[in-house]
Image 1 (cartoon, one colour):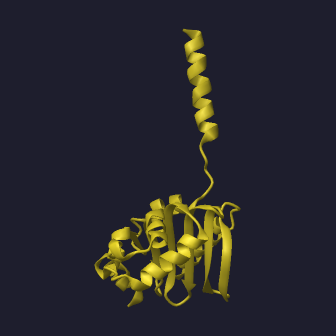
Image 2 (cartoon, one colour):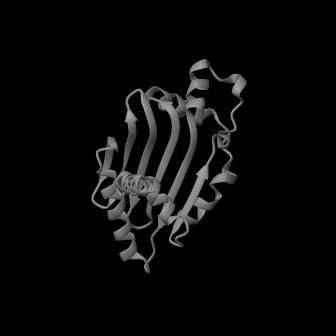
Image 3 (tube, one colour):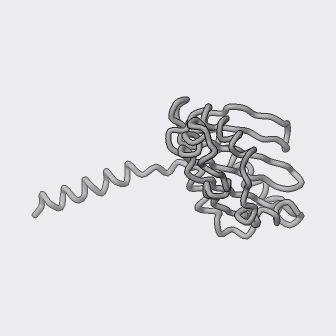
Length: 178
């Protein structure tokens, strides 16, 4: 009986040590989904409204690699300036983790955007687009997929141009733009 107790204690300790308490975008999204200052949105590939029979093999492959998009946007106003600064600092700290590899950054100061990814060059798990504008707030977009690569993303952009986007799925974001 004592051995069984010891085994359970060791398993419990192992589980506690293996838990990752490091901040991540996924945790950040979950923690802020219900916050009144945020708009959270999950977008499926069906938003593209694409006739799959008209896609090339390369375009079909790119579309198959795309699973979904998670969007989290903070709408800044005069009453939440302090929270805006706090949340912006949190996002910047998360994106500085070595797990998030930055592809490009543009803008300066408190206005700008960046594109990062998680994974390897040939097996990207997620693309992260972070845009920040001091007067409006910020938005973080996670594009999730399987075996995505830069070519898939570029090809997906061409599919986007030819798609008939279902704007109904994006309706909650109109509140941010107003």
